[in-house]
Image (tube, rainbow, N blue to C red; front, side, top):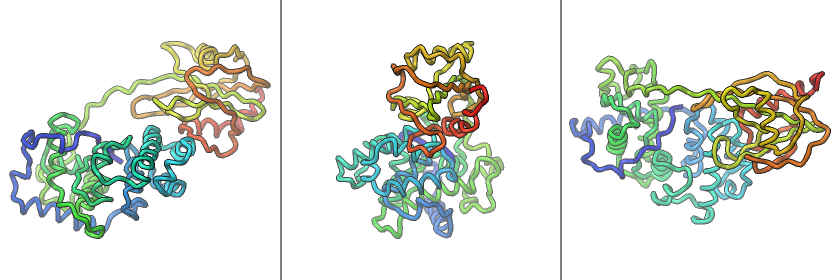
Length: 397
């Protein structure tokens, strides 16, 4: 799934900042594009669980989950999340650990924390009812212009534009826009086009033009107007597409310059006591905020894994615990969008543990790694714990 944009929406832009391609076409052509998209979307689209209801809460949860995450991945998470937290109030009153547990493996955990905070804000400031006022929606934690536009148009029938990677691609090809959407000029042009293409708002739940139009644009980008090998023969607006007429639709929008992704070496210590494993809770802010993990530390420069392990025990745990008997486990990699992590894991079985003075962590607890965890765990932690039943019986342990 293409990432959801959070650039400035058109209400913050001067109308004269960028000429619209629509000004170069007749209103009939604009209407034809809009009508073709609506007819196409309403005649058949993907059966996604969040499309069964148009209430603001389910639209909100689905759109947050879909940020930086593939649709197929989100399906299962959405269904489980809504079954556990069927209303805003249920989400607001749940412990954060429960929310993070349902989010485990989905990544970008600040999304879950913001959902929880926003639900509490809706409970406290709006009596548990999702607000309809645009300013009140925009004030909720974790809701940017795209998410606000999706909720307002799909669930509330308001004429609010959206702009994600799929919509950007469709607009770029329709109007042969060769500017990057993350540039200042690109933001103005793409948001302006998304707004101008919208039909008027409607109060009817059965004739939701703005919501259907926005979903049509997203659906077209996700299923037909693909980044590579777009299926132009089945596109409902192919006769209006300037990039298709030029013969090179894959060149639009222009590719973003790739940045080198740094590699970070990590050391992590699995401490086992009487069949249980020590987990520590990370601070709420930052990478994997609020999640639980074995004591973990980033290695410095050319620091060896064993030297890092000694430093980890001294600094993160604040103890003189000996790691001479720690067993080096199979290293593994974990790839994030902005960095590649390489873990050097160690297993240490102890009969007792000195009092810990945690640095960089807020809480500790012992868990049975063979049992399901009602805790927020990053994907790499879940994978590591899944290997422990056989590893903890290592003959040298």
